[in-house]
Length: 134
Ligand code: ZN
Image (cartoon, rainbow, N blue to C red; front, side, top):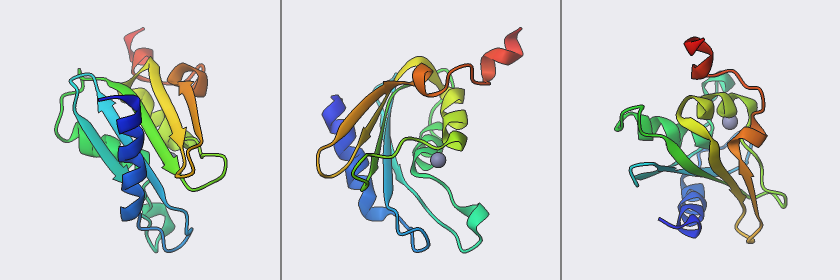
């Protein structure tokens, strides 16, 4: 799976976004260390707290079918903003559970904008599973 294919998966996921309240369609796709990919979109709820971001939908799909020793090697996040949106803080915490510091995070939009980050740069000094090992 190339990075451009993962971006395409994230962009394709925009079509399923259920976002009647924010009107902001978001998509995501994750590539696991075993080569499998999963995509997701944001799914909003009339009770706003029930809303789930695209990244978490993709991650929960992935980890409902894979063991946690499989890591996320790359995540693509798509939005329709001129400057593609990054994962929110809540999603960064969830990503920390299954990613590595070097997991690549790519932000894209349908117009072709693309920004790459390493997870360690988006979640510096974050809390995660490693904290339970000391
Ligand atoms: Zn989020």
